[in-house]
Length: 380
Image (cartoon, rainbow, N blue to C red; front, side, top):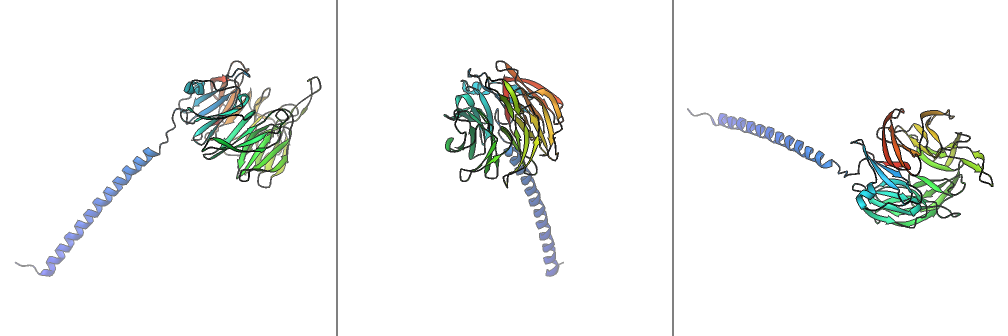
């Protein structure tokens, strides 16, 4: 029997549609499978290579003055362990005299060796040496990013301090701007640097505000006695810890004190908004902030006892001591809020790292180098 041509055409059309649908399903499944596989590959490829020292805490140990035994310790966040003298270990030579600070900048770690007047620059992952910046008299601290860095230096006795501009691509000093006495910590807000003039060899009570675009001094702002440390809170307010200092008579006997204070600055208008008294005769040297940006930690410094907390909305300091122990310096991990505190027993034997939770519960103690004073914590 012969079917009409219309029926035959309809049957072929139905078969063709089914074949196309089956092909489409197969193609879609293949596409989804390949997408999953490529996604998995991408995730594998995105895992960063942190090397031996790329993800962890670099601790600066001053060492004994004049002995040239300053060092860097490494705390492994994942392995919960410490490796000491990692610069010497990787480069087979000493680091220098008085390691003041260490900073992770771009792919590098910058090590400020104060009494050797230099910055040693190493690869951030392997800690192999890649360069050195010499003749930076009494260099103190450095901050920066992949392209540019800035370092403070006290200079010689009686001279103004300086901020050095460093090209991270060429690892060379490109410029400098004069500051007040003893420039210490520095902080970048927008395109402006805020530099705490600590007094250095004497006294100072100012913040130098420097344009990184024009490389010029924009303003000198008067704050409390001997400002040393700076942070920005969640409301973009700048907090300055002014340590104050002990006053000595002609025979170098203590005769009084400049009190320590906490000063809030609007970094946009460059105006002091409030000043809060801290201690009449005690001189903390470090301020840090919690990850939420609403709680300050105050402490650190030779002869100062305790780490205190202060909420950014409080109107007066109430001596809320979180940790009752003396530390030479401390920092706060911005990933988990843990407090890394550094105990310097003296300047001839090894000190200790103490780790506390944000609420002040001790989590561990580790032996580090001589006179540990601070650290650079790598963000995950």
